[in-house]
Amino acid sequence: LSDAISRQLRLLNLNLERTTQILKKLEGQYAMTSDAFFRLYQEGKLDDRNDFIDWAGEYHIFQSLQDQIHCLEEIEFAS
Image (tube, rainbow, N blue to C red; front, side, top):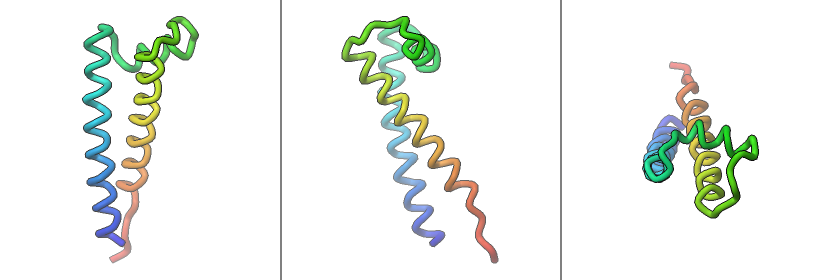
């Protein structure tokens, strides 16, 4: 079980790196952090251009990956 969790963590971290790169590109393009973007997006203060829809989706993926990684890292095994 420990090996399976380790493999899953590696996969999740690779996906997190990919998603982080996409977010950084959008942050540079629009000169704002993803946190700031998402807050404005949720408040309806931004339009629905394709980049913003994609950005919101990637941000959801980023959050989900972080949550999954955190959950797996919290698992403790009895010795």
